[in-house]
Image (cartoon, rainbow, N blue to C red):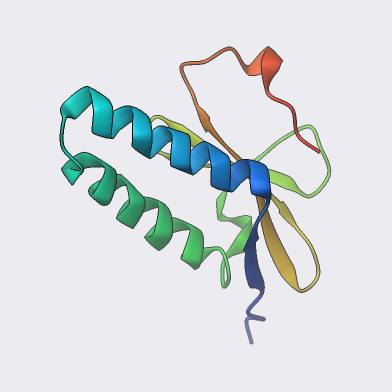
Length: 100
């Protein structure tokens, strides 16, 4: 039986998501793309509750990356929780990405 984990977002990931939506709202002068992207983020991250190992492995133990369009959802797997730590635009320099 698959164990369902809780899904939590660190403050930094919440801020990342907010900034992404603000950027697209301003660029497109519309909230339509942001709404679609938010739905994608929500659907894909909710699936991590049941399938936390869906993301790509990293060089950090228990840290994985889920790719959604050009965005990288960085998360850590715990026994009873999946913790989303960052949302990163994959076109940006990964050297400046800080993961706690």
